[in-house]
Length: 87
Image (cartoon, rainbow, N blue to C red; front, top):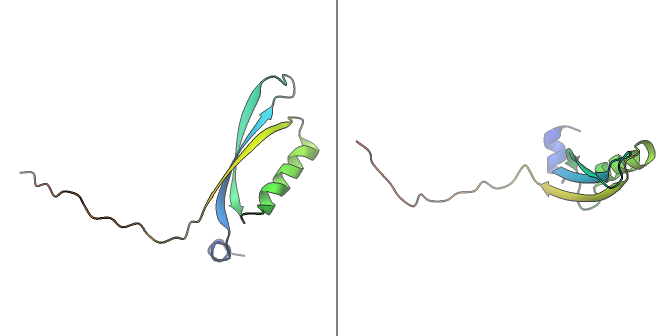
């Protein structure tokens, strides 16, 4: 499916901030940023990635913060509050 078509079907640009424990120093936390097109609210791509993380990586996930925004949306329009002329 093309990028434009997937956006029209409800996919959103999704960013996840994954905080995890370092394998060698579990008391320390590290952050990883993941970004992909995904379908809220189920987020199947993010769930697939987190399943991969749990199966293949040693760092235990502490928390995941997710933000998603549509790329195709009405444009914002606002009037100028002032008009200045410089000579």
